[in-house]
Image 1 (tube, rainbow, N blue to C red):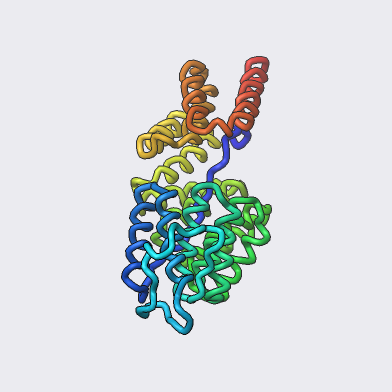
Image 2: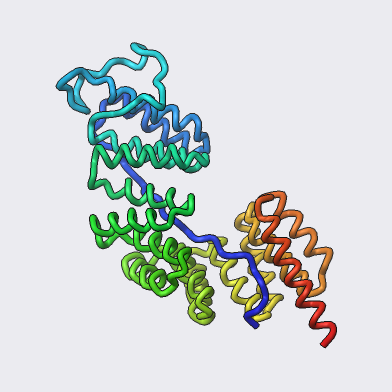
Length: 317
């Protein structure tokens, strides 16, 4: 059965992982501490450190080069202003990208795009700048600009699997399922062991009503990475589509065990419980989902109404 509603699968967007080389020790210290803070989830601290590293490169003596000895110490001039700092050396571009990623994660999309713009002005061929700017533009719903950024990344490196996968996600959002599937096919050919790309293609195949192919993709993702919650979640959605609810709930259980903050898994498990007549279990799942993500309430309420309507019609047949 393909008529039962489920909340959509979120897609994986791949940000770039960067390395910074050739910087002076003091800037490197701030940069590396910023990376460590980012990994620990201290986003404000990471942004502050990346800003300090950029401040050093913006206060070079005339004629100095990044990596030389003409740095002013961080104690020479108070705390840097994040808005006024403009580094002048192309080797500062990765610092801008890292700060942009941290700003993106904090929801400061405008600040993130500004950082990516600055990185690309310093280093126009910097593929990580285009990939990450595309990710942020995707997050704001500017899919055309996101696609343009991923196009540019692919032009720089036609073997960049992340760019194809990200462009596929943007094409999917625009309703171009065929174009999206072509991008995912290419990404998988380039990086067949990236389980997340199989999930992206599986989600798109499901939207295209290619359930066999979608199931194959989610099972491949699970095979590659048995600890990837999205693989079980995607397979659960296919099993819901096919009215195999016991197995779907088992997959939702596995996804939640791997990621206890997986709001969509709670919500869709609740919808499956509702279809089984387990109203109490369903209500518990809906409550848990909304505690994690209150923003899904309107969509979840619509899906609940749809399932209840279907159950009512079924009772009167």
